[in-house]
Image 1 (spheres, rainbow, N blue to C red):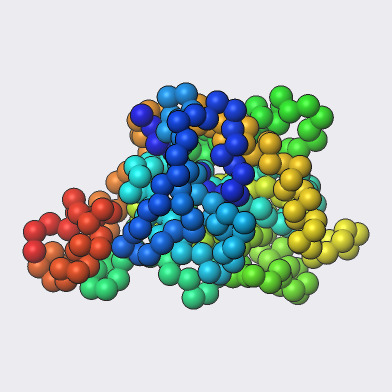
Image 2 (image 1 turned 180 degrees about the vertical axis):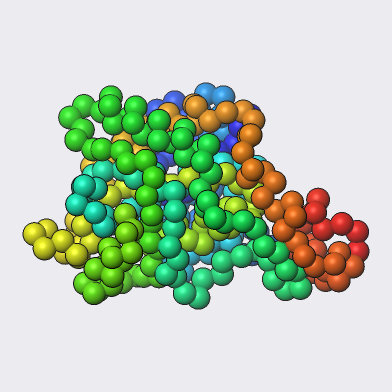
Length: 294
């Protein structure tokens, strides 16, 4: 059975047809994830939901244990991750309520643990194309179908785009917002990095469903971004997000033909004989097949 991880708000799992639901507490070599994981069956797919900020939205973007979140999904067998995120729009044509299937990132975070490697193990994975193209195609088709069948929906789905990830938890200054626009970015948010980097290191396919909630603070005729505006737009879009996840889960293929399952095959540069035993144990779930004999 295909196992698909879904990271996003705590209400995403309320999908029609989801059954055999159970909550599982997972501990990882990198600590505890944001919350228990909710596992259920949807048709012939097994879905594993993880509330990124914990139930009740308790964990700030700069406090998320991204390594534990991704590793927990890996431990439960996830081969795909659908990341659902609230973002601000940096372009006039991406309106609040629209959906962007982003395919590039600019990292403006600081101080976040962004790799599973270290502690005596050096590794490098390719990240030129940070989103799995095959999964993004499936998600885009699912989003277009969901919008097309949603009664009264005025949302538009945008395929591709650059997501600038800031540290938070504060929103951007007006000067920063205008600077990012000059870079040609499409949306702005606080959560998809290092999440996408870690998914690549863990050889999990990753795609983003970015839900536009506001125009950040660059727009001269719109109100500046606020928590109230973000929450109001998200509440309107939550059913649409569930439908995108439902449709995508039904369309994800049983076998992966993309490079993601082999992303770390040649990543480790450290001599197997030089890998510390503690690091070998810590990384066994991820790279046991690549570390060789000590």
